[in-house]
Image 1 (tube, helix red, strand yellow):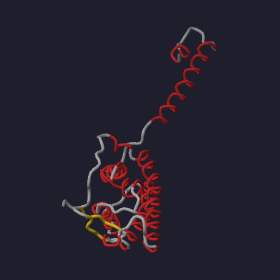
Image 2 (cartoon, one colour):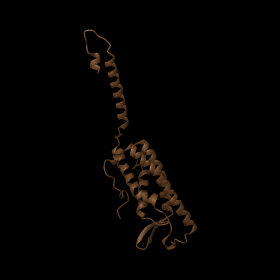
Image 3 (cartoon, rainbow, N blue to C red):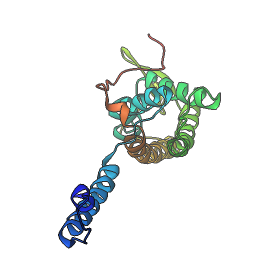
Image 4 (tube, rainbow, N blue to C red):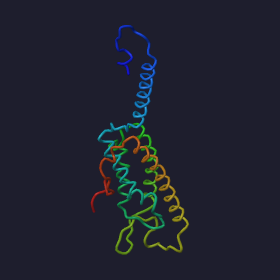
Length: 201
């Protein structure tokens, strides 16, 4: 359209059809570029953020979902769940584990604070106990366990552990949502839930 508009002639004259066609083409091109720029997915995450983001999703799929959401602490839980969370807390306190993306790191620190409160309280008010052939991290000692008659102080501790676990899980959800937006590379490969930090038994 621009060539048509500027094509040299014996005598130059303004041609409204060519000018109008050129104007429409420019406007259409500008809106197309703007629309495409909105659809571009940000993909410049660091290898550290991609790796750690995948770990957070793996936790949300299984181990932390069980530890923080699905489990009722009237019953004991396998000690390895607590070990996994404790290792993550320790690594974060030492500065080993973190997100380099500042927006994601802010959400992670919110979650980390809640997780730390849960880990500290549960560790202090429970112990590994043998229940038959299995060992469980339990608020109620095995020799005092009676589902129909729970001591008041144990009931209060169980309620607090359940509350702190729920708060940590609720803080994990916005973190997962932020990772999805800011670090889309976490989905480039299938995510598998597994033990990540706790030692093999």
